[in-house]
Length: 574
Ligand SMILES: Cc1cc2nc3c(=O)[nH]c(=O)nc-3n(C[C@H](O)[C@H](O)[C@H](O)COP(=O)(O)OP(=O)(O)OC[C@H]3O[C@@H](n4cnc5c(N)ncnc54)[C@H](O)[C@@H]3O)c2cc1C
Image (cartoon, rainbow, N blue to C red; front, top):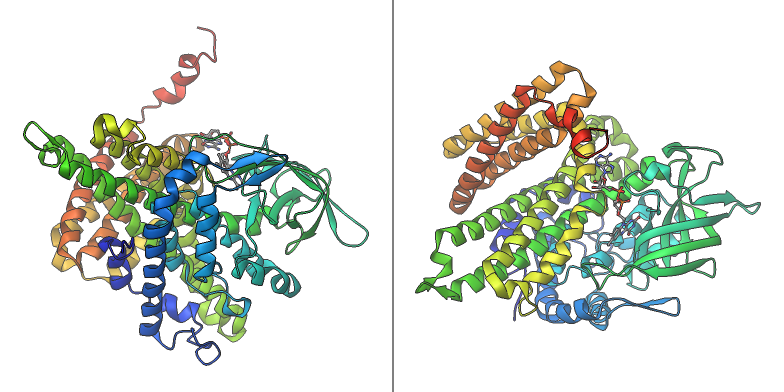
């Protein structure tokens, strides 16, 4: 039987070698539920064992059940007839299979019928599903929506809604984007008006809503009349009724199994989630950060699928009387694909663990208020790390996966451009990962504060303090060189004290920061694996060249791009 977890030694590496002890203690609240639920782990070892068992089930479903249906899902696509949406049959069957395996409430608490899995395991599950079919994780990852209700909803809302998510009876959608408000969510206009009975009415249009046809939507709306900006926005729970009409679904390049809906709300009855005016600044940010991590996992999964297919094709394909895998220009492409997937995976699970620790500390403080003083500084530290790492990995994984899928077609040559192989599907499916849940450019905007503000250096200090790198001396020295590049670039930009200059170089700064963090993560992984020493060497050597070139450019103070672009783009008279 094929199994996408058991055939993936790199993914297993992270579960066998990463120290998840703090994540487990926090997520399990020191195993407080061990006597209450038969399937709750008894100790650390039991929890890890449980995670691997669940991932083996997900790996088997992905390889044996989901993957064989993926082509048909892509060809049929979601359909829109008479105002209603139908998912492709293969996707419906996949969701049913997941529900039968009791995987619908992956990250929800046991008291609501969930599995209480950490985000780290959830990311792995999404990666595995995405390798099989990129449309499926969009449905699975919308569990993040239930987690937002779990975190910010009232007890009544949680008890009413969460068990339906955990049983698989309910899927949800996240309705943020509008025709005139995409990256700039502060400018949304969909109106929420409070009614005398305390409920709300929604009026307006949402666009590009994944699974917007589902029973429940979290809808972001302007609740404060006449307000502008983020503070006038609240988040609402909307259960589907006559008040919402699906106007159409998008005809897309990829992820065709996933319906992307345009929704018209007309006096649609909704209820407030959490507090008024906190919709964007708190709840949606939480929801989007979870979703961003899920997209990073989706990107890694698609890239893994593309790489596996390309590598096995290259092994068998012969040209010039030898396997194309032995031709330098081909094996370099394939090896770079493998190296960059390993890099992304390393940061994906690092970020997932950081998020688990941050969420776990918040949960612990809620359950045990007496621990607040002890945990306060750790919470602040991990919150900053989560805010930095989430946009970094979303951007790195998505852009990496796009390159991998591009190269996968190249390795196949002409057949890669046809439907004989999955390479063309991966190439179409992966494109969206750099766009939704905030484009790669918006991830730069989200990360730059943590890069310039020093959060990245705090994390690098942790890595230095927590590890003895003497066994991987050469790698470590190169990682330190990268850190020096980052420091030089950040100092140079800060000395200018010019926000425009900083914005102009923000992508370069974020690139160097990402490469530096990845270099350290490779050093840590290399302490446990000889193969990682080699993979890390290839990554860090290339990263250092990129970083030096970026620093050199930043230091030239050349701002020709800022000066010339308007004329070149025809925005000013020549
Ligand atoms: C298939 C699909 C599924 C989706 N699912 C959902 C969903 O479930 N829920 C939901 O609410 N939305 C969803 N979206 C919407 C998606 O999140 C937005 O399309 C995305 O955030 C970009 O917004 P936009 O399309 O309006 O592009 P724009 O905001 O118009 O951006 C256009 C370009 O300008 C750049 N840009 C804009 N502002 C800046 C800036 N400040 N700095 C640098 N560059 C900038 C962008 O990077 C981009 O290159 C989905 C979209 C698609 C295509």
